[in-house]
Length: 432
Ligand SMILES: Cc1cc2nc3c(=O)[nH]c(=O)nc-3n(C[C@H](O)[C@H](O)[C@H](O)COP(=O)(O)OP(=O)(O)OC[C@H]3O[C@@H](n4cnc5c(N)ncnc54)[C@H](O)[C@@H]3O)c2cc1C
Image (cartoon, rainbow, N blue to C red; front, side):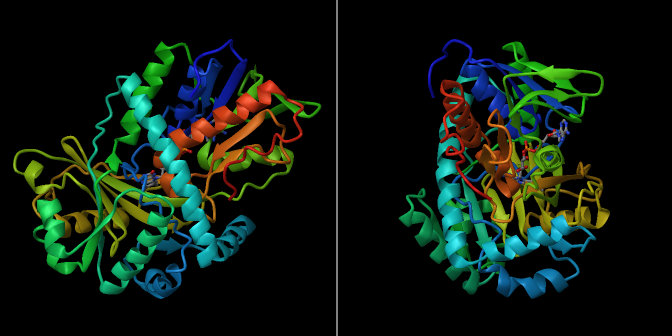
């Protein structure tokens, strides 16, 4: 990234999730005068209680050819991690159609390639952030172990690893069950029930909600303005530019705008007749406090149990357990059955880390998912050039946040250097 230069102007970032806050940090360092607007407090959207994994190397998109063989079980099993409620909503049908198209092998491989490149950029910027700012967020270079229930799944993983290695991905090792226990002794009770695992020593974990809170504080200290508790209701446009956003009782003018409002971005793009291909993919988490013996019985390495599609991440003296994917619209309610299922998974993998009295802090959030699993970055052709998209990060928003912030910086740099440049739509790094 470049050094500070004369302020290019005032930018409003809409959304104070990890994507908006990361963008605010990168743009403030680049000399922009930054205002962040959110209808709520920072980190109260999908970023708050997510799976906490910085999954830079394990980026396999949900839209994958392997989904077809799993689909009957995923749709029919009562405790399936996937739940689907057909709505009278053309946006849902259109998303599903595009998702199915994205499951073709060639598309899935191209998606993986783009995600790996963005994740590598994200790691660089994230490491810079951690070096430069003192952020309390339970960050750890934990490594990650993905457990496969059967040999067929493990063979599929081997093929995916070959693809990733050919694209320059980090070191990943296929492990037998006893080697899984060697890497993570807390798996001793469970390892005999898996066919093996894929271990990526370089993966990391961080409490995304705590990171949002810490970034909010640091950015405010550094002069970034926050307008919180105020929903953005619309836009004020002038010729082919956005001039301001409309809040409850005021308008807020700026030279440029970044739309980083997660699932809320869809509504805000409609002003220009644009239907962003983003649909909420609901997930759940629990967070267990660890005391005494429990600290030894809980994993230190991040674990993904693919048979249940549940992830476990150690956050200091807590264990975060997250999973599920529900296509049920904008419903953020916490379903007790899903929480019971996360508890049961925890007890099966790591008996002893919780009991019935444990306060598990149930949480639900909506991943802003595009059909392919690629975020929308840069200018939309039907929207003004001074509105930059940074949304649709789906299941990898924490991982990709800092890389996509850097893409936004590059886009706005180009825009300020020559707003009339006809090649301006070019910096869109990924398409949905
Ligand atoms: C269960 C679960 C587990 C996950 N695990 C991981 C993981 O391990 N690793 C990973 O990388 N990713 C993970 N994710 C995905 C990740 O959490 C999301 O991709 C990421 O949080 C999206 O960030 P965001 O800033 O775009 O959206 P959000 O965090 O939702 O932030 C959007 C913000 O915009 C605001 N907003 C919306 N509309 C308006 C409006 N009109 N006016 C003003 N403000 C508005 C909202 O209030 C919100 O604060 C997980 C997600 C879930 C649900």
